[in-house]
Image 1 (cartoon, rainbow, N blue to C red):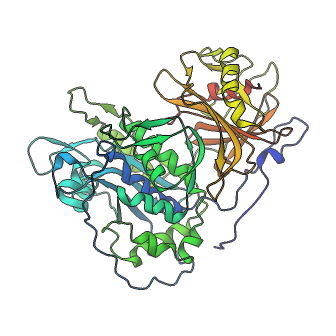
Image 2 (tube, rainbow, N blue to C red):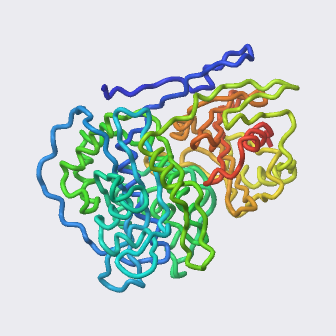
Image 3 (cartoon, rainbow, N blue to C red):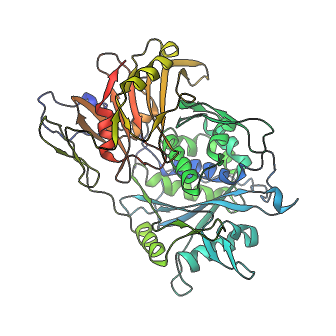
Length: 511
């Protein structure tokens, strides 16, 4: 494999002008998403969910110093066999008392297989109910580490949830990260850009971790990134996991894996990883395998049939059949069929990629026209977004409302941390308590462009499409006249259906 970066034009630069459907090769970007970036970034984002109720509680340092043995030579290795890596984020709670052990508050399995078409990821709810962990009754999955460290967690996952003693689910490596190491990891990699769905605010000394993070696409450094991904007030497990997964997706295109391996970052990162990766050599082995599968897509496996327990325990329940399906799909991931680019024509429905969805000339009945609301939102952002054309859609879900407290005009900071590109974010809150939004900026090459893998023609415009699985997560449009870049982002859990996303995008109008 060569470390040469692949570049190319943006999909909108390649659409022919004759109106006929064409397959368009998506823009590859400066560096394609790498599994090394996935591992290193995920280990940080995993470490943060459970600490929102402990604003200053230290995590007990259970990590011995990393041996100072020299790193192996950094060349592209032969891949060897597939490996399953468990990424565990650790936290510590006041209620457990001083000196108590940590809990694995978030658990993500990653399958690195050089013979597979994709790298699979499976996130497991921290409150998933499991059988007794050394005491009568039942427990939550995140108690496993607390009661027996990584061996107890591997046993529960390998022989109770995803396997049996006769047919165990094998975990080859465990990477654990304390939440207080997350900000160091982010700063070591360089501050990274992420799309924040709404305004997050918790005042100091309010009994929860402090945060004051506005909405919009922005450069987040260590402490700000930590506050965002660890936020948990009023969120379910599913929303928290979706926020972390989206953060991971946002930042993974911004890390050059070869630079990490050869540029001296690996020893610095190793210091922030837990004792489960006890030597730099082991971390380098995982990293080198990850480099081998660079550029391959990621298949996010969903644990199905998940529901909250009704007994007041706060547990999350699933079924043995759902766990078996998750195991099977994780070990042998299948990618969705190649998406089909379409041209919408008046009086004719066009087949869209999400499960045969058809876009018709009339919007879905779930949407309503709100021109007055769109104009009010545009007015609110225009002054601070000078130099940028403001577009806001006419349509919104009938049950949604514009969030004036999150909607804003601002400037996106450049790599030096100074405000640079005019931008705005219009945010709407759905009936489910989640947020979608429209972003615009004069920055013509934000890293978010690298997340698109498809294009569609809607309402005479060409939109790049980012999917999560087969769901439409983001639509991106480059204004050929004004020079701005605009995108419509779904909720954290992709609560808007494809028909709704495409119809809202089609109604985007300059205000």
